[in-house]
Every structure is written in structure tokens, then in C-alpha cells.
Length: 155
Image 1 (cartoon, rainbow, N blue to C red):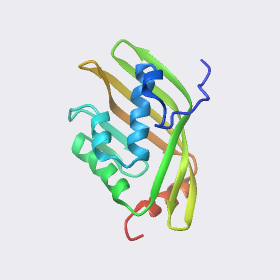
Image 2 (cartoon, rainbow, N blue to C red):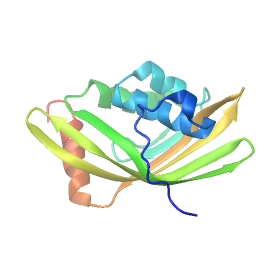
Image 3 (cartoon, one colour):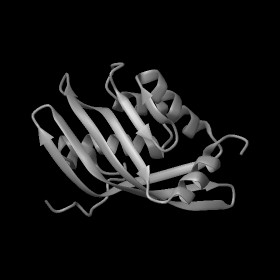
Image 4 (cartoon, helix red, strand yellow):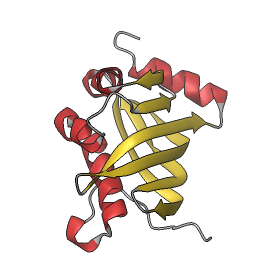
């Protein structure tokens, strides 16, 4: 399977995308616009969802996951990412995307480039793809530490 090179940024025309890519684009649109309502809508409306990410650690359920995005969106750093070098894997009512995120975290005049390995899993619920799991990892521990510090309020 060849990885897709065209990134998902959140700025795609949803009408031109297959439904799994539309769900991914909706996530990145919510993230890059710091839109908490759209972010919550992208996730499945259940407490069985989970996330293992570099900022919040392992979180389970809507409230814990929402709290991580609230902290990022309301924090002092402006973070933007896109999904690239990915493959899609779909079976009936589930799909997962495995790839990389690249982006930038900017706080005042200081910025850093981000590089994250990412997997997102979605389920088809009531005719709509909803995220049920996310896992993200940094390759470089120093970059992870700098990113964590940059997004914390008052750091």
C-alpha cells in the first residue's frame, strides 16, 4: 500500500472528499481553527472513546478528551498541523488512518516545527464517521518536552 502524499489540512472542499477523508478534514479544520464545538462533534458521543497523545497522556471518555483540547485551544501557543504520508484502512463500519502530522507551534515570537506519528480510528455511527481513538507520538523526546512546555499556560 502506497502512502498518500497529499496532506489533509482541514481546508479541503468537503464535497470533493470520500467520507473517511471528509471526517479527517473535519478534525483538522476544528483543530486548526481552535473550534471546540466542532472538535467535540468529530468524536463519537460515547464514553468508550480514548486518546493517547503527547499533551494529555491517556484520556478516556468525552470529558477527559474535551479537556485536553480546551487546554490546547485556550493556551498561549497557536498550534496548527496537517496530516500527510498516510494510509487509510477501511472495513465496513470502521476505518483507521496511519500517518504523520507536521505543523507548527507558535508562542509570541517563538515557533517550533512539529513532527508527530499519528493514528486515528473512526466508526460509522448513525450514518456519520466519528473518531473513537487517537494515538500520537513524537520521534524526538527534546521536541516533545519543548512542545509540552510551549502549550502550558504560564510556562
